[in-house]
Amino acid sequence: MEVITFASADEIVAMLKVMLEEDWMGLPVWARNLAFRLACLQRPEDVELLRVAASDLRAFGPDWDTIAEELYHRADSLVAGQDLTCP
Image (cartoon, rainbow, N blue to C red; front, side, top):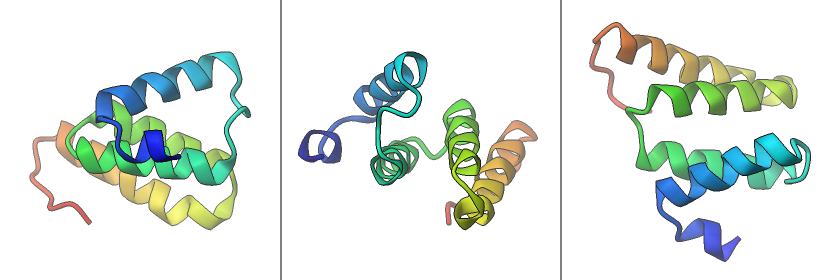
């Protein structure tokens, strides 16, 4: 986890992409959530990343549905050209 904690958004997104393609369940949920959170914090305007993170949260139960909806809303707002401050 130390590697992910200090990784750049590019490195985190690349790791997540490989993980999602090769072994979707290979990373524990808490580690996935942390990785997506760190990447989204570094790239708050990355619509694709926000949507992938939201989809991943939604896949693991209702505990994170509210956060997933916020990420989807943020992505939609960015596409529509609205400037929202990050939560």
